[in-house]
Image (cartoon, helix red, strand yellow):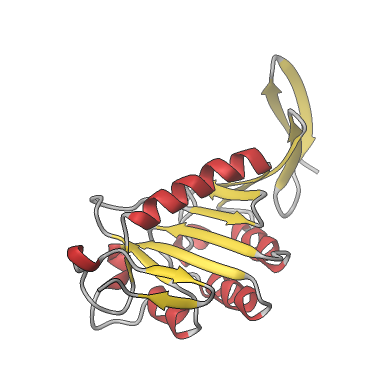
Length: 198
């Protein structure tokens, strides 16, 4: 077993490196850290999604991971509210993207088109778990790149990330396979139905 050393709050803490990811407790907050190459960050994400009970909010720049997309669809089929904000690069015409796949499986998608790029890689699960880091939800992030992923169990932090998700949703348009319409970009999603402003 490989031993990793971490310096937290002036204390030298020795933690074992797990085959799956490294876990620990910082200021009473449970966390897991995962790095690629060498660790299964995609599996860590899908395992967390499998435990979702009522909500998953996603922000993603690039999204090509089939296992993660399927885990989101599985959550939606269990009755979990899944809502996704993607970068505009995921809504390009004439190609099948993760936005297409998720929309076809009844998951509402927003496109954050105002910034140059919407570079977030975030999931908020059940208003308590935050997943973030450099790790895009892609096969390249798992198998080709050097990336990091952090899973934090903290309700206060989750609330901060949820507030930002809602702020970005207000700046986005609902995905329908079309280019953005700034005058009609705000679409409301309530109780499982889309409501288009006139």
